[in-house]
Image (cartoon, rainbow, N blue to C red):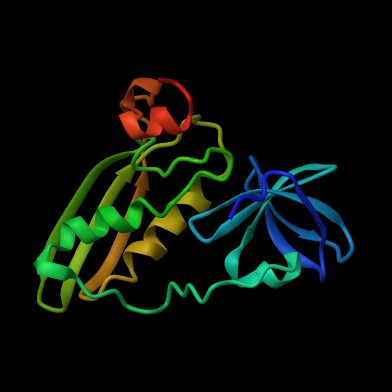
Length: 182
């Protein structure tokens, strides 16, 4: 669904995360917003005060009917490829300002799975395109939430790291095509 020019009024007040600060804000009912991105189960909206991120659970405030996506349902792993399932879930996490997932942006540096008696513990090291971005904890929490939807995952830890520094060279070919860089 392409929302790039759709302007709507909020049907009710809604909690949002201000971009790029990462601060929680309340957007009032009746506020006109433009939906600029709908990826990974979140909506990026433009207001007269800047950008904000609204979660799919609050899509009704935008007058949008969600198609039943629920992150709480456990995903079963096909062919025992648990690490592959983790990467698939990470490809559903987006920076709210960039229409490319965190894997294709080259933000995920390490994915380690450790088998334990009660289940698997996943450790992710990732970075951001800019060290000062306040959205880091939100994006990391999205990644953790997505990983925890996988059956047999006991815990998921997502650590933000800054070494090596991210560069555009880390973007996959697919990501570069989506961004018009090639």
